[in-house]
Image (cartoon, rainbow, N blue to C red; front, side, top):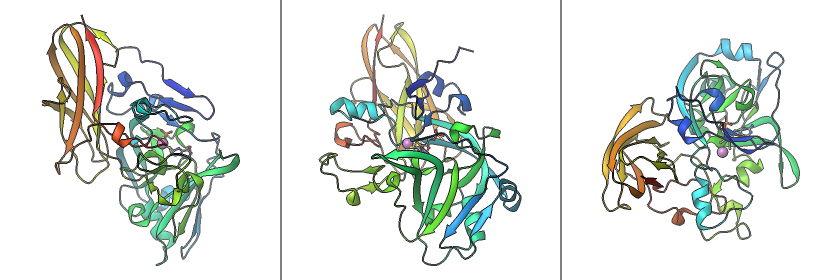
Length: 359
Ligand SMILES: Nc1nc2c(c(=O)[nH]1)N[C@H]1C(S)=C(S)[C@@H](COP(=O)(O)O)O[C@H]1N2
Ligand SMILES: [Mo]
């Protein structure tokens, strides 16, 4: 086994760490110690014994549940799911127009784990959701700073998604208690949605008529057209990021690498948060004029990524390699990152390109 590369630390406080591409394709489940970390504020140290999960708002029976009650009252489920930050592949967007103040993630803000916990829907049904509730808001224990003001991190999802069977409150990651940096003792897991909705260090769940007013929901993690800037943005008009777009990435070779000419192993990942699974992954060595399908090597649950690989026979010289995926409904990825540019640098799923040299 090759020694694992050190992780990429983008920021120490709050801690923001990417998983190097060569680690990502080493194992289908990312070891917890190598799982990317995205934090916006403090890293709480929550006492599991005194922990109480609060469920309030538009419910008939507000609840306060200890970990023991939560795990004995509700059946537990295990699910393999990929978590991806909306800022994954931001650095390619920044290449066409700078994105000051945003973490310049490569294709390294993504990882996959096996999660265990209870269904959010079961907990909500026990609390008795009132007719008028439309949104489920989550609040973390962590404190972040938003435009100079201290706020708890928070987010919300529509009630319909919250009741879906895949949405869990998880206490285990890869067969061990959640590590502190991933939300100990309990976090939300919203498979198929951008990572920001999977709130860590979960303190409180509120049922409400409107989306969360937390700035991380109302003033962040929304998508705008390329013409909108920080100065002109009307946050009411932005679309909150939800479902993860179809995406695929080349992990090897890496951009800028020099390798031996001849048979070159190529591999990477692909995923989608959509209804239809990834069905086809294609490579191009001629800037997108022609494409060849590659083998999808590993594919698990509907909510997890798949790994693909190929071996290309290539002569010495400089090469460009492109990848794109298709889902079972015949949808594919957009060609250019430039057309997707948005001033927060979210949701880049353009064809992924790497340039490398063969000698
Ligand atoms: N409480 C809390 N939850 C959070 C965050 C946070 O900063 N605080 N970051 C969110 C974002 S943007 C992402 S991408 C995922 C990252 O999860 P991870 O750090 O376990 O990889 O957590 C989400 N949940
Ligand atoms: Mo994120």
